[in-house]
Image 1 (tube, rainbow, N blue to C red):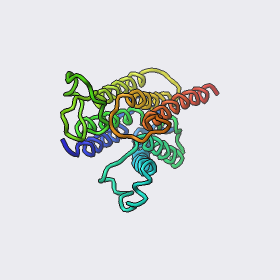
Image 2: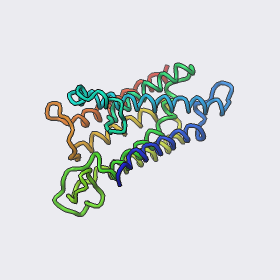
Image 3: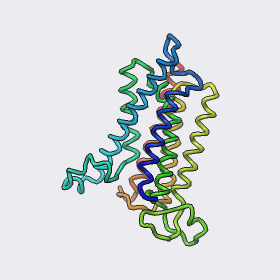
Image 4: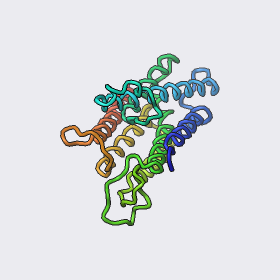
Length: 248
């Protein structure tokens, strides 16, 4: 299927925004007046800011990585239709958007980040599904064709490949389920968001060793592996910070 990624990414974004607007299982983000409608608006604003920041950050990071090409094709820098997004840049841009929304509403960034954890996992599911259908982020060639039906590439070839996209989809679904279970437990503010970053980063790092698509190298290490490791470390670091904040 061609152009499935933009469609599924859009649907995943809308599903995440709907979650923020209508679902708040623990009522963790309500304000002092206990007004669920006001809290829903704050969560939605944070989601929209994170989405906007994520899209900007994802494109800017991709352009920076491929600066040699875009330096002679400046007209394509803001042309999203031509493809090219960096999920690591998207994650950092989303965090920036979240912090801006928290400052604007005078809300706790930890609680708003927690509200965005499950939508982030849903968006990851949509992204991996889009890659599976469109053939992006494809896996390495396999000697056996047993798993060929679970993988794809954008060359529309029949080469058996490691099912990187399918495994990524399963990992994102498992992360979403784990975050749902975490919502039912008592935990310091910031842990769901940290768990989401850690899970997404660890998945990207692990699957980078199975990918066969061309990616720039840094000291013979794939850039997506470095990015995944960075986001995983960032998630672990935020978990420690949130725990310290809760102990004060």
